[in-house]
Amino acid sequence: MTDTADTADTAVQPTSPAAAPLPASRSTSTRGGLIALVVVAVLVALPFVGVPIPGVLPGEISSPGSLQVLAIGLVFAGIAVSYDIVFGFTGLLSFGHALFVALGAYGTNLLMESTGLPYAVAVPLTVVLVAVIAALLGGVALRVGGVAFAMVTLAYAEVFSILLLADPLRISGGEEGLALVSDGVPDLLRGVVNIRNRYWLALVFLVVAYVIARMVTASRAGRVWEAIRENEDRVELLGLKPLPFKLVSFVIGASLATLGGGVYLLLVRGANPSLASADFTLALLVMVVLGGAGRLWGAAIGGMLYGLLTLRLSALGTSGVLDGLPDPIEGVLSEPLFVLGTLFVLLMLFAPGGMAGISDRLRSTLRRADGAAPTTRAPGTPP
Image 1: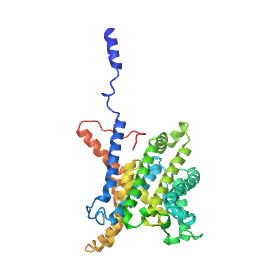
Image 2: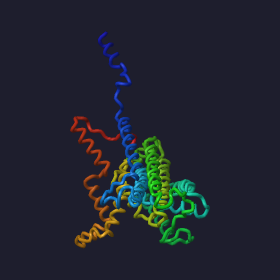
Image 3: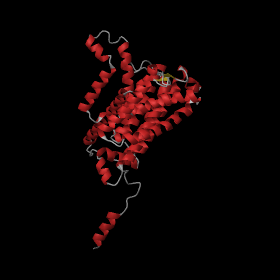
Image 4: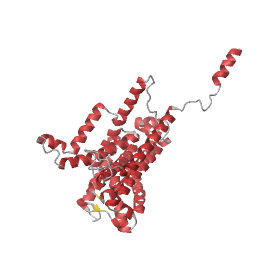
């Protein structure tokens, strides 16, 4: 009896906090946070780096042309993160996400032009207004699911795109779009000399989008989103109504996309109707899938990579570098969409989880080589 009692006492004896190992999810989260801080620090310092990256950037990293390319890539990364909330986490295949990017660009510019509001006020006000619009549109579209939802959102985007091009109210500029109302833009964001500040603004947008996305996806709502993505009927059986949760996801994603549209307006000094096209929404889908749907850092990398490839491949096609190649090869390589489409197909065939999936497999391989059991991300843990 004494031996049994001693054994029981030993079994329940608490381990000192100092000796207890960190839970896997907490350790992974801490390591991920440190990596994110290092990445942000590197991105902050890039405007001071005078090193050229041939073939990737048009000049030295600190040159205005290179910083412009990088800034657009950062904005695409943030917009991809916003779409990952809707598609990657909640499983909503929306073909109208580009609509909110366009509303962010056009809305900000029109507010500055019609009311004289400064850029710093027009952008958040546009985000609030578009959030209301997204709630109304989502309240209707989300009453259907699957392909029907995708078609309804596509219809929204197409109607808005047609209105932008037709310009019946003479406010959108038609096919030419709108030039930036520079009067509302502060001096520190104007001109080539302030390209560093615009680059940092794009970086701030990405950080804000990522932090908000990480917070909401790690919350109770985020866990419900993942459950809806996996099996919506089971969520209903548990007594939860999926519609309000899906609507929150839709509105948050739309709001962050609107914010990205406002920053993009400043970078390219105008709003273009191509932002509202279905092609751009498909591009967002490619960004998320390239990086890894449901993995925020993967979506960010996919968006950044897509932005760099699109801009640099377009420049490559007109630079004369491909002139010595046979005509068929030159024609193919000068089309960014073809190259990106090929990359997309190859990833789907050999790496369905995108770049995040490749990273997971590499980590699992290294753990097996070290004799440790492979681990996977549990639902509800920060992505």
